[in-house]
Image 1 (cartoon, rainbow, N blue to C red):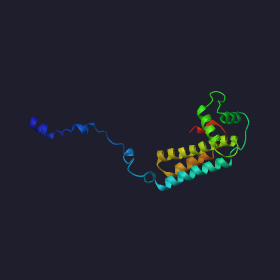
Image 2: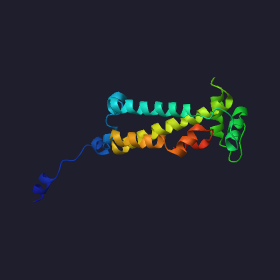
Image 3: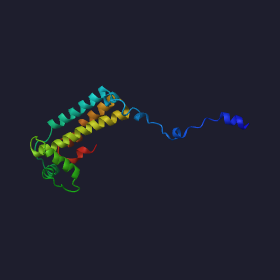
Image 4: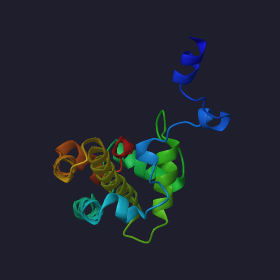
Length: 167
């Protein structure tokens, strides 16, 4: 009777096989195929078009000069690499200061351009997130265009405000 139980038992796995972990299917092809083949040309092209469209749209509607209240505070702080009112957003001020070095219009317009770039990057991030979530092109395009033309988002992408980097 002991013999029949021994013959029916599954063979023991070797030590190295038992320690190996299963490979995540999402990571199985990483590093083997070029990015354009994994994402697909149409999806990559759609993301690039959305990002560039958002940047052009926000740049066209950019506030060209110093504005009142907080916007002027952020623009002035970036120009001298100082801190604004509490909490000060030092990362935003440093990035805005870097944008003041770009030869484009006046200092206020350069700081506003940072918000346009960050707003366009946010639209692109939402596109990628929705694409990864649903794995379909149409919902990703509709969702990112909806964010791109939303009044509040557009406002943040046109003025010097640290809120444009919320996404």
